[in-house]
Length: 69
Image (cartoon, rainbow, N blue to C red):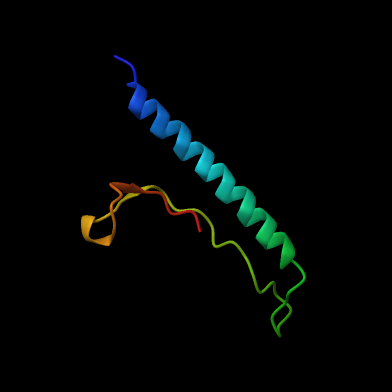
């Protein structure tokens, strides 16, 4: 059995939101590309990617949380 309509809509919405956040983050990082620390390193950088993990109910209403930043 495939995905139900609700799950399909949620999945599509999740992808659209993730793409919008990625685009916004890319634009933000581009604005600060020339900002350096006193030692000459970039001051504003992306921290990397982490795998999806379970989120505890007392920290919000999400059952799954993907940490990207």
